[in-house]
Image 1: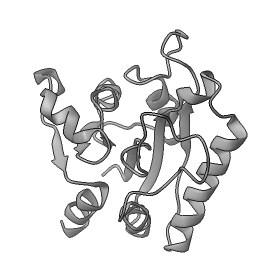
Image 2: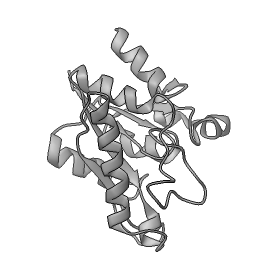
Image 3: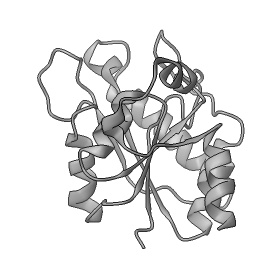
Image 4: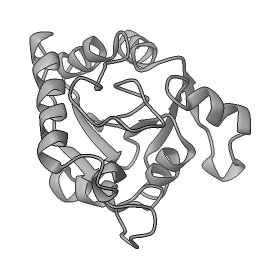
Length: 180
């Protein structure tokens, strides 16, 4: 069994904002998400993050600020007895022509390079583009209804995604996953 789980960040781990998360103070965990990551880690899963961070390309914040947000996330998970794997991010804007901005699978390809095959690994996101990036590399798409998830579900999921598991939150997914 593949013990890798891929998470989107904004809207899955932390509260999302249409104005972007630009500072460590604006990076606010969704209730239960940090403990959920720690529980997965304690159960032997490697939890990695794949996140679009176009605020860098747009000049809203810099890489040092992003690194500080991720250091804070790692500290909070560690304080709950867990550990995070790699954090992979796309710093580009939507018009930069990169291959790492979801829905393109470049971030997933970076994860494959570091961790190996991701076939069947859950990819948990709150937007269609998260799920599409995972599908392109044969991950199991999981939609959470936090962040933009409810809006994504309300728009309807395309049939080409196949069987999408839907959970209220990351904590709900972890409760389900660890009870099996």
